[in-house]
Image (cartoon, rainbow over all chains, first blue to last red; front, side, top):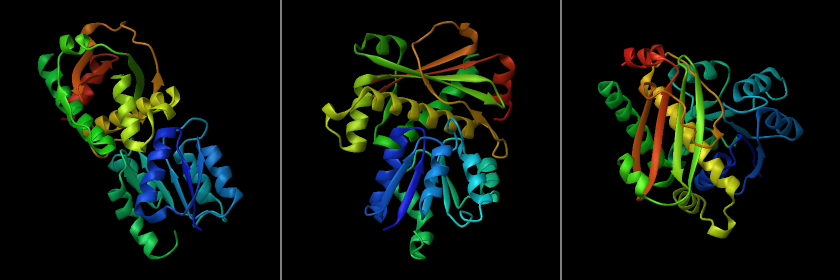
Amino acid sequence: MKRIVIADDSGTARMMIKRCLEIIGLADAEFAEAENGKEGLALVKQQATDLLVSDLNMPVMDGEALLRWVKASPKLVDLPVLIITSAGNQAKSEQLLEMGAFAVINKPVNPAILSDVLTPLLNKEEV
Amino acid sequence: MNEHSQFLQEKITCVLEETLENMAFISVDGSSKQECTEIEGERLNANLLITKPVLLEMRLEMSRELLVQIVETMYIMDREEITDQLIGDLLAEILNTLAGRFMTETLPADQTFSLNLPELTEVVDDAPEAKRFTYYYLAEEYPLIVEITMADDTDLSIILNNN
């Protein structure tokens, strides 16, 4: 069973992302939810995770800091991090990709966009 | 000021249509202050501060009933299951998405921006009218109001000069 961690301070956004992931074929995945980057980091450290989906704007620790911590950790460096944000224009997206994000997509998210982005990962059976 | 207001309205309308269509298959129509005022029912309000590269506040006011209907549609939930927290959270998420899309549409692609976290608030009428732009819509026949308040004219100039 795949494990996916979703970090977003909005419960609505977490529900929406989870629902989209279920629609694109990840319904049997184990989902863990975090309200901020700090909780998200704790969850991915706790247990092997196949995908981390994170918002950018979050209290306590934002998504950018979460991404930096993940990519700085030898144990977590290969974990694909998908950033889903409303504050992701081209400049920000390029910056996050350079920092090691697997992909950056803009809210509002929908299943078609998620499917396009995650298909390469799904095909490699890494997610 | 009317020219500026029209430009901002076009951008707001565009991102609002895109956001609600994508989130909940809801379409929006332009409305007026009078029409929105005449429609009864509880409204909820959220504010969000954009801090860089301009200082402005975006406010979103929506009918509670509309928010409930969106939750019902999006999550296939029964009305009895829907909590006030979920409704407030949805309003904040819509505002957050709107603000991000608005900044993406109005700033150059190589310009980053910073958004604060959205806050659920009461409507406070304290900004001078000249710096405030209010737009009225109907979504599924329920009122929806988007308001942008600029800290000063410099912020408005930055947005306009990029377009």
